[in-house]
Length: 243
Image 1 (cartoon, rainbow, N blue to C red):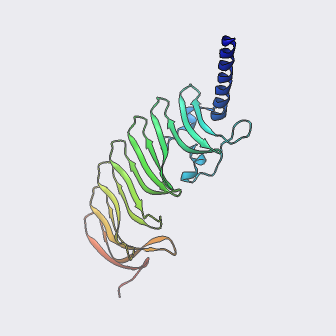
Image 2 (image 1 turned 90 degrees about the vertical axis):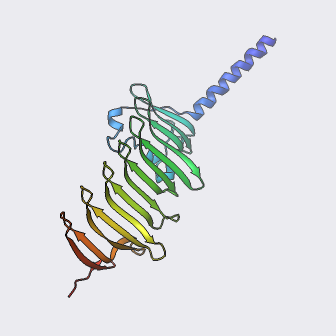
């Protein structure tokens, strides 16, 4: 009798576990690595399922129900390409993987209205780090494969205007530096550089909230490749010709 009860308990437990497993992990999909890994942008196909970064699509099971819980997808060769946690068909936590098993990107919620994304090269070196606030990137940094910063920007807490935006060549030389110097008046300094690191142009800019644009405003100096300067005067995006 005890054995029968014990066996019945095992059967019930197994059935319950199988039911939970099926409910949490819908039928997986399989992908050809050559077709889904973009050489520049990586594995982007899951971004549309992530509402936190602006996605607007829902993932359903083969039966038409919104995915719930953990889901795994695979390459046609058998390696895992994606592990994600879904709520009502959209992603809230996930990692994508290269065929060699290294993480391609990792996404997680890091606070109220905030989330973070890390993207990697296939050799595990960091490629991008992004912090989102209400679906928009507040902090963004891209890296060359040698570890040098390629591009970085920071937006204001309300996501209304830029704090800075900087870009660099692979050897670390600046290409463009855009910095907020007067927060109250939204005045910026901007510098552009030639490939050899010499200054190309510099001047001030102002943020126009009605156009959501940054316009040249004030004194500007353009330099030729020999360093010879040419002075200009700008007012809210329009060049003023000196008489």
